[in-house]
Every structure is written in C-alpha cells, then in structure tokens.
Length: 178
Ligand code: 4NP
Image (tube, rainbow, N blue to C red):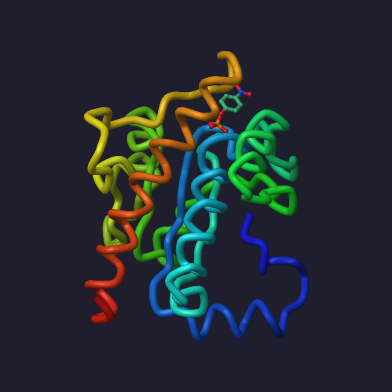
C-alpha cells in the first residue's frame, strides 16, 4: 500500500491529480518483493526529483497478508541499504487497478498470469514482468524469497535495484524529461 494512502484525503487527492505516471508493483503476498520494489523505486524517484510526477503502489495477487507490514527479513535487508519500508501495508490487486495504473509490473510469471486473468479487456495499462527493465541480470523473474534464507532478500534487492534503473529511464522517456 502506498505511503500516501493514509486516510489523509487531501494529500491523497493532491498526489493522484498531480502524478502523471502511475506504477503498480505486484507479487504474491505483497510482503516481500513488491513492497521492496515500491520502497526502492520511491528512493530512485526522489533521487531523480520525480517524486511528484510518478505515483507508485504495490499489491499481491493473493489476500494472505492484507493489512500486514512487510516481512521482517525484507525490512532488515532494505534497512541495510538505507531504505525504510516499515509504513507499507499489504493489499490485494484488483481489476480496478488496471484503470488506475499506467504500468503494472509483476515479479514473476505466475503473478503475471494471475494478473492477466483479472485484466479487463479494455485495459490500457502496460502489464509486464518487472525484470524486463533490468540490464545486468539474465533472470526474468524476481524469485520468491519467503521460504528461503536471508541471502534471498539481498538477491531480490539486487534485481530490483537493477530493474528500477531501467524503469526510471523508461518513465523519463514517457515524461519527456530524459
Ligand atoms: P511475496 O512473498 O510474494 O514476495 O510477498 C511471499 C509472501 C508470503 C507467501 C508467499 C510468498 N505466503 O505463502 O504466505
């Protein structure tokens, strides 16, 4: 869940109206990979002074962890790189997201297929694997770290950091600011 979606309707609507590009990151549970992508990409946007122009959020294709904070291991790995994701909360992706977001980026093939199954036929959203934007890795999927060891969370961060650079360039091209 986006940090701006905090019940303060004034800041929420300010953000929704001013943001020119909207990006949704999606994994299975919305407690490991997609909130990590949301937090990392928010940092990249702020570093590029594009925090106002781009609205980002994350969601899971399943409802296992709706309302839950990110997994502690994901938070610890992100914190070691100076990224705070503690305010994020899980939510489930819905078909309405396809009318709200310009990019809907899945962490793996299974979740891409879950999203394709609920995508309205008239959707204009770009629905892709997030790692299509990565340059330094051959992998096409961000592996699910939930049942693995702590090293998995660092690898998730490496992949997400790389894809975030490519996504930022794509959005800059879309905004005409590159
Ligand atoms: P995520 O990881 O999709 O990256 O958030 C998972 C989190 C929870 C579960 C599976 C994957 N789970 O089975 O509860």
